[in-house]
Length: 332
Image 1 (cartoon, rainbow, N blue to C red):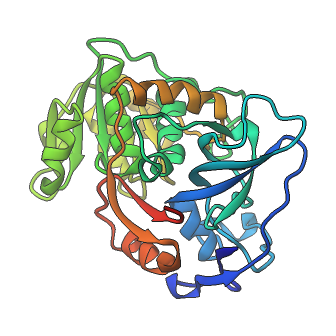
Image 2: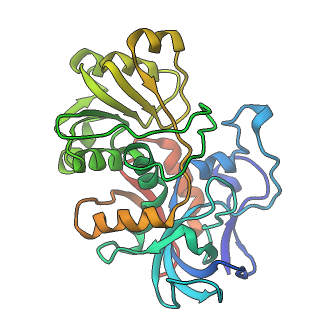
């Protein structure tokens, strides 16, 4: 089969379109013919050699590596002990995350059945492949963590804040993968949602249900928004603390990506900061899939690239300002 591999850490140019063996399946697994695979930040973190992590925490990587966690496709074979899936079923999932063994940038993948759900009929394979990691991140932050594993970033087990009608949620980086799902899930729960993004994304986010919009290229959220109950910061980084002042006392900050906060400042403001590391969950995807089927969630697709052009997809990701998800098409 064809797959994308890299034999050393580096930029998008290290991604190679190689011939590799079709994987075998073991206990609890199914073989999936991949139709599309989603592109996510951990894919380029891995390609870069996990430089995003402190040196002492970086894993030892053994090359060559096939990146990717998210995929949508059709079941080709099923292990004898697997129940609930059959040859010919259309499925989607985020495979073996956290970890580096998803290997979805390929024509076939061996997938743990526990990481899969049946693909919602209303989504095509491109849309379904764009959903898993981003929508599971938003779901586990806002709705149901689904496990009791402490966050490696805080050492605490995250507990989602109840979102009810009357709750105000601000989403920074609202047009991106996690952000556009956070907007929709908060709205589904009855919140008033304020989206922060560049102006070209306003129409997209209004269509997803955003009640308010802040164009960060023209004004600061802290100058025009206050009294927010919950901030989902899908951008993170060193400037994330500027959103603390939009929160009411007792509010909650949810940084999706790496961000540091002064504990004295958050204590003074009465703000709780909580974080997660998203984990694979077929059952959660099945529950989320019902929302897709009912038209309560949609997947924004920024762009698609053939699997052979994965390096171009990664170059697109590096340019930023993504609206929804970047997806690789594998099989028709």
